[in-house]
Amino acid sequence: MIWEFNFALFILLIICAIAAITVRDLLSAVVILAAYSLIMTVLWVEMNAVDVGLTEAAIGAGITTVLSIAAVSRTTRRSRD
Image 1 (spheres, rainbow, N blue to C red):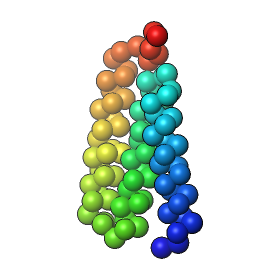
Image 2 (cartoon, rainbow, N blue to C red; image 1 turned 120 degrees about the vertical axis):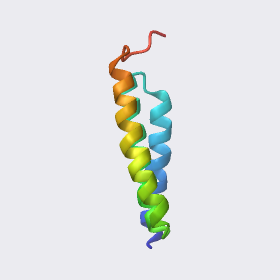
Image 3 (tube, rainbow, N blue to C red; image 1 turned 30 degrees about the vertical axis):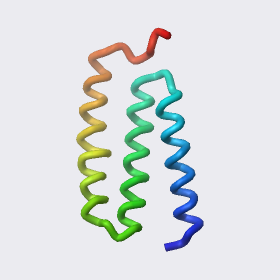
Image 4 (spheres, one colour; image 1 turned 45 degrees about the vertical axis):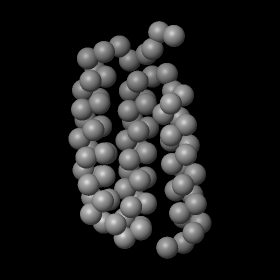
C-alpha cells in the first residue's frame, strides 16, 4: 500500500512497545499491549496475510486482553518499586 502509512504504523508499533514496558500501571500496560496487537493486525492484513491478521485480532487483541484484564483485576494495579 502506501509506504507512509506503513511507516506511521511501524512508528506507532515502536511507541506502543516502549510505552508498555515503561508504564507503571498494569491495566495501562494491558491496554497498550492490546493497541499493539491491533496495530499488528492491520499490518498483517496489509501484507495480505489475512488469516494471520484474523488470528492476531481474535487471540492477541481479544482473548489475551480479556484474560489479562481479569488477572490484573485480581491483583494490585500499581507496582511498588
